[in-house]
Amino acid sequence: MRLESGDLDRPFHIASIDKVMTATLVARLLEEGRLLFDSPLGDLLPRSVTDGLPAAPGFDVARDVTVEHLLTHTSGLPDIFLPPRGQTSEASLRRVVATPDRRWTRAELLAAAHTMSAVGRPGERFHYSDTAYLLLGRVAEEVGGDAYATLLQRYVFTPAGMTRTCVPFDDACDQARLDGLDIAPLWIRGSELSRRMALTLGWGGVVATAADLVRFQQALHGGRLVSPSTSPTSRGDVTGCDPESTTAQAR
Image: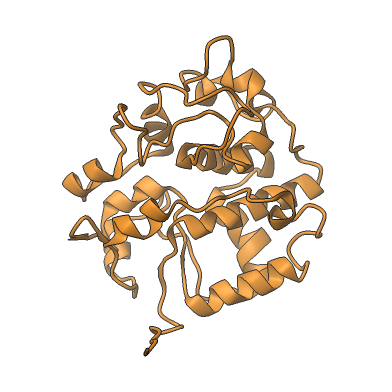
């Protein structure tokens, strides 16, 4: 058997690996006293963000969904990128391929969940949800007082020594900036989308090198980003990893 690896210093879309970084950012903000794991979303986000998000009968997202629920994929919120069977989403990966030049805003992404149904009651069961991590990004901005990409740079990338990592598909990106990126190809359902505006769909999507990912893991597990007691890895499988969204969809 022969195993080969690519260029450790060429940036690539890390897909759902960035959820671990989002969770780390949230843990840092918790250590600064900005929030609690059991804080309900209504204490952290304006109603304009939570209104319209689907909830099980008798439940309300603002009142009953907590930061912990979002982190652990137990919020009951459906996944807008990979909708549950029988549901549809304007922001599904299938539709993204059909509109590769569309720019997505955070409000549009969260609004895509408004026509969907909850997949369970908060805390009831695990169900992988990109929607939950979009909300965590908004929570970080609200309590951290800055843009999500800026907060990641301040709390994660810089202290971990990740010098080749960035968030290029933020609200400020334009096609000229994306065209100039040195980045590995990204194939989704037969279309190469590595520099297409449609990847604003993964708002906050991180581009990194393999070497920088090693630096991140070393800093996280070495206690240089958050203390071991609040580390995302100490709370069980808080981020999950959807193989369909990170591997099969990238073929």
